[in-house]
Image (cartoon, rainbow, N blue to C red; front, top):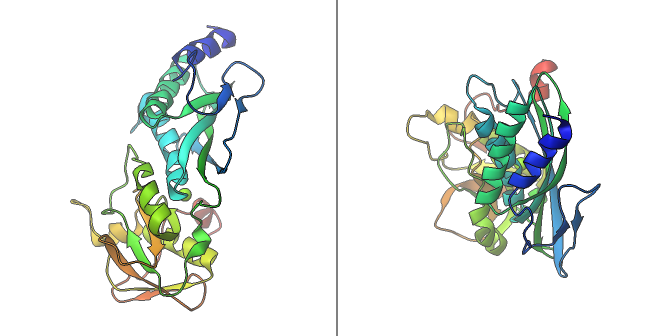
Length: 280
Ligand SMILES: [Mg+2]
């Protein structure tokens, strides 16, 4: 199969191909660029996410279709953290052969169909190791993106589900957008571990946290794992309101990023790809 035939194979299977799309995509796969017509009174939010063989997944654990699904789901989780509605994605993929490209793209399309995302374009290349970079765009009512930096002393800290086991098939919490838009002052998706992601939100918000309760623990996981393990893709958010959700503590004034409280694990850790390389 030539590259042109492979692109055509991909194009024909892309969700919405050849249909009138209800969203703002005017030109999709097959031209030099995609064309998107933004709506008035909305902001577009963008994220980009790498998926690399042996870094984010291994062929021992994943079939190409499952790895592709996960690649898009991870990017959508970042949109969920902004309380955004996904619109379209651009996929750059380098892989060893045609079979892997087809399997991986089928997984991306399955996820795209599930969450109503248009795959608007991308790029293909050949590589012994699989590299995929997905750029994803979503929309929010103007000025309503939930940022990491909005937490204020006195805000309560919530976690939207039990933690502890990494998810092979992430479920991006796009369903939380109405809740977050109504209540959240700041939010982050839990991709790298509760303590590490909380620290990021605190640093962005120039605040500290006093924790009063541990996270809920998934069946089969330890409390230690619930504090540390990444890839839960639940949401951590702050709110001025008391909500009927699991609350782990409060935002306080203090050194930015400082986390205090009883029964915390001794070694705040999480997934930091550069931490290990630098021995720090
Ligand atoms: Mg994120």
